[in-house]
Amino acid sequence: MGHTMALAFGLAGLLLVLPNPEFIAALPTIGQSAFGWSMANGGVGYILLGAITVALYAYRTLGIRHWLTFMLPAVILSLGSELLGTSTGFPFGAYGYLNGLGYKIAGLVPFTIPLSWFYVGLCCYVLARTGLQSLKLPTWAQLLGSIALGSVLLTAWDFVLDPAMSQAPYPFWEFGEVGEFFGMPYRNVSGWLGTGALFMFVASLFWGSKPLNLTRAQLTVPLVVYLINFAFGAIITVTELDARYLIPTSMSIVLGVVPAIALWWMSKPGQGVEPSISGTVTRDVPTVSVGISQK
Image (tube, rainbow, N blue to C red; front, side):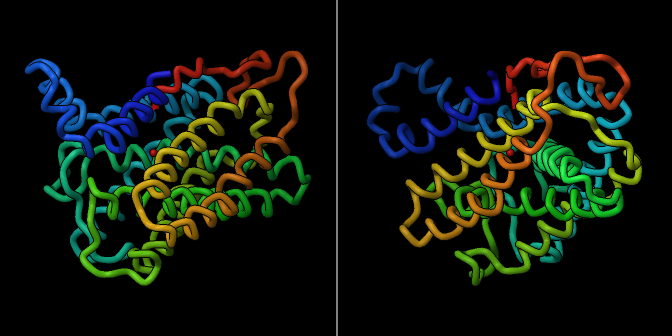
């Protein structure tokens, strides 16, 4: 439960403790030091825990080949998009990262950001691909649909993530322009869709067309990781920003949360013992302990 606890403590710190400096001042010196360290490194911690959780899940459920051939394209291509975006404004618009998310690669992009693209992206893609398999569509339609739907789920998460992280009282990045879409430029949306679709497409080339054969129980970890990361952004957005931001939050629910749950439900319930994609035999229980250490 490490990732869940990290997100919960992060929310408590941002929403309850930081707005009340008298509470911090009343802490003993060691308490103030511990709180300062947690606020400075909490973002790094929860992203690392998320990446570890999803990496373990992918390794044990999908196999090492599927894990690495998704993680490496996701990390490399998302880092490329982020470096391009922070230096030129394309494809996300003009923006820059502040402090709190760890060491910045080339002085621009925190090393944790590509990891968050990986772990949330894999959750979205696996949910989309497994859910669409149940519709018995032609193979090409399943593969293209998985990329399209996976990138939509990923972008829907950003509808609550970006306001929470860039416009709340304690931001982690900032846009260099006033965006038309609730403070975000419209091209930020197309940038998210394009980046997600790109690395999912590359991963799909390595994965091939063989069905994943994952049961509903085996999809619980991706679903839970997706939902708690949505909840983190949504709670900050709804509580810290004005009522206008209920609109992107509602869009995130309609385009992300509802489809994610539906895709999970569409997968086979699983009875007894099921073969995983790697060919090993796995029982119908969540394959990774939801020590969801986990964006």
